[in-house]
Length: 294
Image (tube, rainbow, N blue to C red; front, side, top):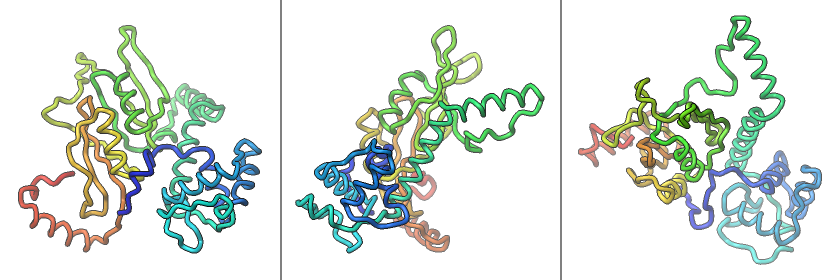
């Protein structure tokens, strides 16, 4: 798995508006560098204006991040030194760039729906349906299954998840004693509800001796996210490694007792290939055969 940790600090974070505009400009066609600058300005109605130097640095970083590539297959880690030459090169979006574009579009849609007329309209329609005795069985803004976690300090937990996983806060509701009844975060394109402890309702945070759930978080770069989470205060449980099932995989425990699996897909083995690799892993690691690192 190719790593660019020395260059990309937070590759799983939302892509910047300039990068987003450049990726949109490359959708469906390849362009030269100087054409990309003009297309980004046109796409955004003039909001994104990139001078030659800024355009050069942005394109170079996007190449290293794997979001775009040169048509001639130039090594992405080899830096160019001439902005004018950079502007004459032909670029196209990569599969990673398309995934980043789609993820950002999904994230923007969720955030927009929560704060704009579409979200207001949806909530009003849901309220009207409840009055008619016909609640929506599956709210479209939620996945069918998602974790709801209890923490010892919901406000502090929200701050941690913002730092570690670049979460956005969508909603917060506190009771009269200040404890948070419901706090909703957006991590990537998934909502994560959490609340403070309420012992009277048997809602308590997990002990340090065990966990009842593992929160699985797919990211662009598992190594970079693992390092950032640990730097934010998480306890490392499993260093990033290449799992036999095709994921670059790590585990951390956050300061509030919840365990997170951090993963990036690097291979897509067939069922037969995965079974073979699993058997090989168990033979090489007999102590983990009954308790795999998952």
